[in-house]
Length: 550
Image (tube, rainbow, N blue to C red; front, top):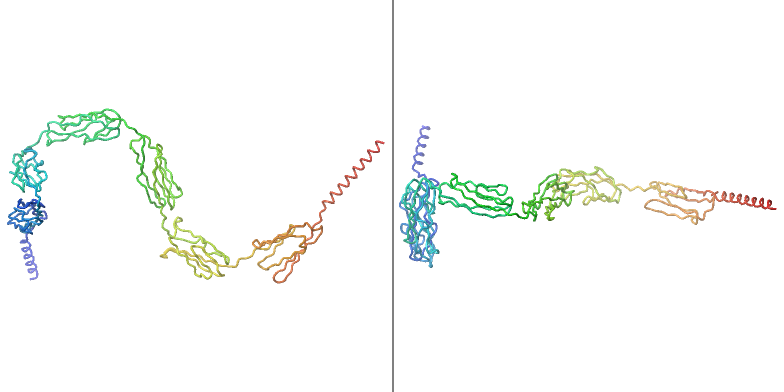
């Protein structure tokens, strides 16, 4: 039973579907005009055109405003000034037309055709050209009708299509006047080419192009294929469309030859010399953006393209950011640079601005995982990014113990003895690094005392010292706190063998006494003795000579 029920339902559905009308998506109706202009009490005729499988049966014509336009079986009449819509209903098909009724309507006074007859090959086309007077007529719309559509058809644009051998009449009728015209069309197998013609002469400049126009007689000849040839392609070439390219100064013949070779037309082309001086250069890129290690190519265009000297030089305003060689730009590191290309002739320049992007940071680390600084000191922390050219955008710095160490933009300041962890991170906290910093007291440098060439060292980390000079009249001294040095100098008033006493007392009242005895200087004694001996020798020599003279 269940199977029988399903079967009956299927049959009923098929029967129901079978009675539903099926329309092709390409099936429709359309009025001969999308819009119409009428004058008061003037008439025109609207035709219903069918497309695809559409058929017109008992069409219903209706005007949205019969006071403006009246319609009867496609004939519309202007009643009063205004605009309305004419609608047509035929079964499931609908179409419409906008109608304007104007007061200054200009009627047609005449209709004729540019040509009254013609020939067309099977499947070939030919267009009818109606001539309507006056030229400013308000409604120039005409309708076309073939006397025998088996021989030739005509569309509403006046295009005739040949169907089979024979002749028929195409009627052209004005829709707003009683004027008509006829066109006799002869459908033939082919239309022979009688002759061809082209420019007799042509003068063009070197490196320029020009087109040679060809005329066919008759214009609707079936075979219009021609071959173009140049007598000297070193002077000028010609393509399949008759476009001539001048290469070098000289004279050349350009020939158009019909496909069967029965018709030849010749054009004498004279190519004149031009200056090949470079007039300027352009580049295809004014700005480029690159990632590090990426490249791009800048192309130079020369004006004119046939310029003889096309030598150029390339330079970069910042080779640390970007380099260039033969127009190939290579990004080195983040930053900006200007790439300049300069022509040898004319010194024409073009500039391309290059922006090398900072690569996205992958990770970051402090140069030292643990550091020590002295109380009261400031220090700038160093970080290492990966890749090295990258950096954290708007980094966030934090100190785990700001009472001990503060940090601002990587600068830390030691406020108290202790430890703190400094952290750098991005906004999302995905990339970060830490370093541990210990704050200690700054140790003092050993106290160095120089006395007459002697160096005396005391450790200030153990004791604080007070320095006194025993004989201040004989010494001068300097005490540089920053360098922790005491320099004692001068011995002008000291006598040989004098004893200088320096007393150093530490904070525990321990006194250290340093006795420095100046050494005796025996130089003058030796000089005196030698001088005395010399004097004695001189006196002795004088006495001896005096005795000889006696």
